[in-house]
Image 1: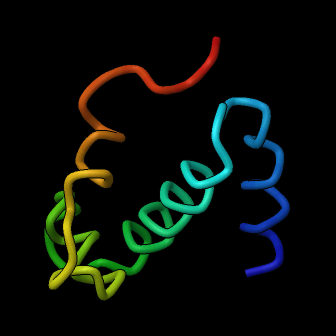
Image 2: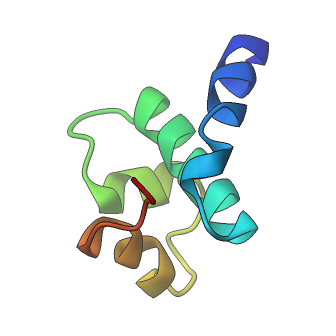
Length: 68
């Protein structure tokens, strides 16, 4: 987990909002441990977010959200 955190912290400049960093980190970790196909819905369920509003999570994948 420490290695993942160190790598993830290097991506910090790519995000304009802190909440986006934490949201995408949670989804990335979920993608690593998600069983079956790594769909957005599967990642959200793995993260334990299946009973909350998913709209913000889905917006991450809608368009380019990172500064180049």
